[in-house]
Image (cartoon, one colour):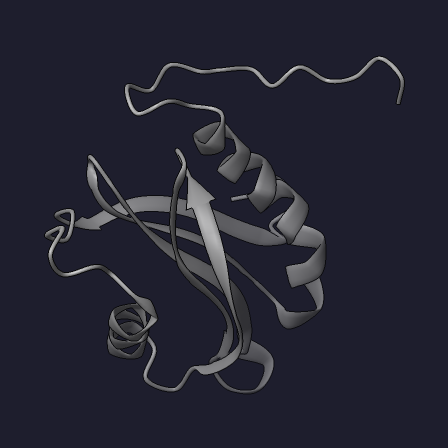
Length: 126
């Protein structure tokens, strides 16, 4: 959870890596989302990448009234299994929370399949 309580960022292994002959696609991800939040409304669909592997991701709203939450949730099949990357916040804070979420995602993008970090050099002409 972010120090000011504005969002919760989580990464979890939710199952084994899908078999290579049955790719994990957006439809499979929607089934998982619907099982956890049957009241959710998906507002956008996008892709998410970690360790050079892509998977489906969604932005959604769920809950009712003052308890309504906004989330970006992505599913990526990696060696460790099927990982779920998620940020949850109030609808008004989701946009501001995405910077922190992307920072977490960057730690996975900068790793090779063995977990070794490969730093991306930055230009000194910025």
